[in-house]
Image 1 (cartoon, helix red, strand yellow):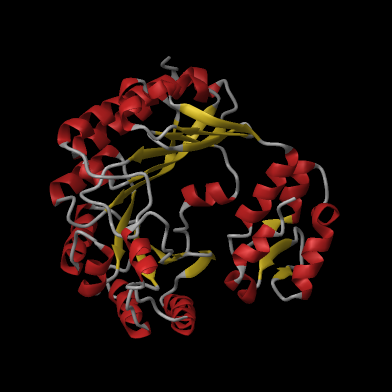
Image 2: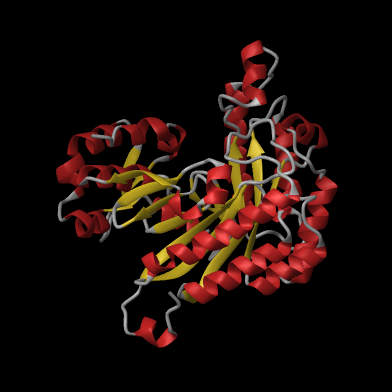
Length: 392
């Protein structure tokens, strides 16, 4: 159903985030365990048609919402023909109430898009790019199985700036096979000396996931990773060096210049409602979590019949998520927001856990109103341990 703008103005619209999953890539990287893989153009086209069908079909569920962030992820969304991104955005504008100030992000990898494609994205309304670099070292890129060179990244970045993009994130990754502290420094410096400097940097540490080629190498004893001390030095260097260039760490793995925090990802950590479309995409709406199935053929045949793993969250589960997601952010969790959400005091629910972690130097409570409960520097190092204690 297509709603008129006048109809929408009579409603008090709630904010909603949209995530669109495009599961295609040129080839799988050696560390990747995401739902993604290569496919021919016919398969890609059929999938995008199905995604448009799902977008239209789900719009009635969103009549009471205004979409204020969109994230097109994958896979590598820039693998599909750029015209599909234009059609996706046209469909959203026609069937959904889209905020004029919406943050609209698209992921891409160097070597998968040219200047003409970037111009199409810009005209379509994409206003934030997330470019996967991972490393400025050619040998490290090869070890990861990346399809691009650093020079190709530089060209993609330069073209994106030239066509008008002013909000760009660059993904980099530390603790790579045979990486040294100095080679990690060179990657950071290569990003920080781009002209113009990017607005956002996501700095992740490699996690070797089961089922990936790197995991198989680890099992065979042929994977050489930095030792714990080197990894710790990389971790410290990241915050120090990025801080010198005006980047504020606002989440465990994310740094932004002032005003450029990723609104979409902040929404996940703050438990805002979001709708995921495409294979394997997850959603949270009205305290219910649900996920689309992962089968590609099934999705092509019936994109509106893929919803599964429906979980209506209990109040305890909502509190758990509030804590372990909110603690990922450097500001921590708000005592006031917890009270408004659950009608209870945070210390009433988590008194012993909070006191223990404060005593251990892993949590701290900020003064003022409202008070915030946040990880200390040491707590960030042990974040998984701290967060696990907030599970009932």
